[in-house]
Image (cartoon, rainbow, N blue to C red):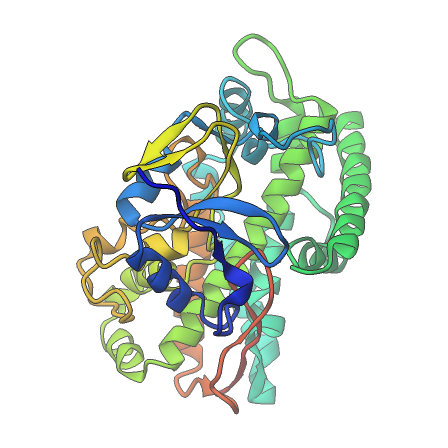
Length: 399
């Protein structure tokens, strides 16, 4: 186990935002675990191989609580409240069980008709113009409407949430991101207090249910935990789905043979969504993990207290797992395709994955059915936005 030279991502000669996969291929060729320095100056151990990533995502020695970091020296632990992505068992177990109890398959299934209705309403509004930015007109408002209604956020506040969320996940704007996070936290605290005042009312929204939820020992979510959970569900619950819908459409429109195959066989719809998740995952990397003890991965020793990044995007294009991984192919073996890590793995596997799949499938079917001549409008070069997530700034289309 020899010492590694730190890879300087800032020195990468290509446009990393437009094409991170070339960098991942080069790094992965030198080993499935590399020590990297980001343009921000932060360093981390990056796990790039599929087998190693899957194992790391389930490794209890790799913790989410930043207090396991060797660099930790502050009590400023939670950006907005306290949520599942920043905790480990037993806290994580308690928080997730309370949310999972309300975020059930039955509740998600019951949303199908509402998602379809919202999609149709947006397409009705788009129709007469013949062209639009698909993100602004469809991919963004659809999941935002769904998650806000699910949580019980009033419709008049949806635009504010869109603005806050966009700033929260932006790269290179830490001050704007911090302000947006705090503004959202203040709003959510007020909304939670309103739900508490009407605790016994039979409202039925998820946030109201979380206010009332008790764990097996009678404990309840604290105000800090409620704020953190609402923040996580709102941002993760719609930003990632926006990207999933838009990325899938962009891939199909730039791969006309795949689009034609899907139009000819609607049974390929589910696999098209899964292949898009593999090929352009909306969340390209897991949140930071910190080693509670020294860990050896693929012969590389990662010391205690180190920052670890699991590259989901790299793992999803690992040729050791996926034959011809740089090819977008909706005909892949479904069992193999669904072994992607776009939603993570282990105890932190995305709790909203069923909802994201439901929304993406309904959105894609409605769009293709109602816009049979859908095509890109103008320059086909994807306009990727600098973000913690993998998404487009805009997607001009015509029909």
